[in-house]
Image 1 (tube, helix red, strand yellow):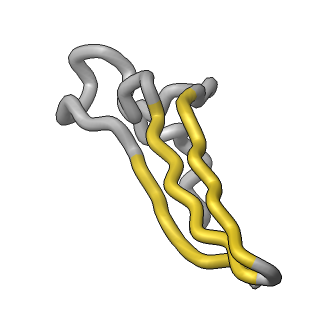
Image 2 (cartoon, one colour):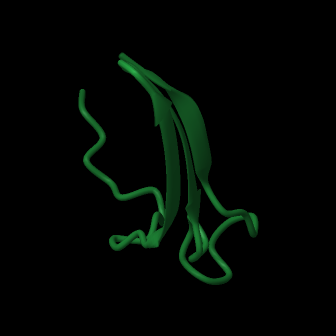
Length: 54
């Protein structure tokens, strides 16, 4: 059985991204300016991610 619900997540995400690189290696950081969940349907939090690309 598959659950095809949206789990009260916002359909649109917007935010900022910082990416810095040297030669073939980049470091990045993403931060969403809007909340992850629909208002009053989940905890108040903003998604972020970071990592390395080659």
